[in-house]
Image: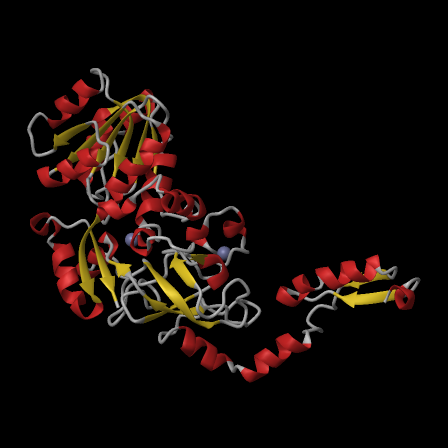
Length: 404
Ligand SMILES: [Zn+2]
Ligand SMILES: [Zn+2]
């Protein structure tokens, strides 16, 4: 080969997309063989590689959109026109507090007939044209956030605000995981391979609740070694924050909830103190644990005004309030007190950018989110699963696993 190429001048036409990336290796091989390689930029709008063009012709736009979603949402089609979704057979999945918010009507963007669910593990059944990282038969973890991985926000790992139509769309703007099959947009960036032999029910906790508690609670709240932390709300997300806060060795972890049964679970998962917020002296109890001055970090994991007001009452000067809860109405912020006490308040929708790290910790057994699983149902018992999760206090339910 080298004898044929030495001294030759070869031009390669740079195209956009996957084809352009695939040129890297032949380019290098040609240079190593002695050719002078010149990269030519295509004239604007003039060039499509044959492969790209053939795909466009064989896949009419209407079919791509209808396959992507029965509604009129077109966020699954990249600007280049190639669908990059994966179709998965879902098993297992679970129900989230946000699904209950949707059923109550708190999320008006959800239209009638939408299939809910944004968490789960599955097996790839079909691979979209532009997906390069997965093949049929791969076992994968679904991120609750779908993202292109290429736009300005995705480049900053702010996947929750993907500018190409991603974000929290699954079980919200497009059909979700409470079904036998689901289509996951932007498969390459929205799925993670299941490591061989991993506990797949534990991995369902990585789709949403573990990264939400960690990113929006622990990381936004700047939990530090030796800190005193209060977590308001001992539901699955609050308990996920409790589990992941311990990665930073806080000195005291106070769990606050209305339900004694949940506070007992919190103790088993590492809470050093518990306070029942129905008690008239709940604030005094927290302040006593916080050496009379309060807590360094107050995590709100409920999403109603009284719990965020409680966080404002217990945080120390210079401390952090990290709001994790899903709020449906305005909350009073006592700015006249917060500013002079140097309080930082953070909010956020999870990006799931920490899934790779959390996955390693779960597989190694350093984190055991399967401790949050209390009930199992089959897919045809999904209504019973919703009833149980919706009556969590009575049923002593945390996460319910649904298997197909
Ligand atoms: Zn969720
Ligand atoms: Zn993006």
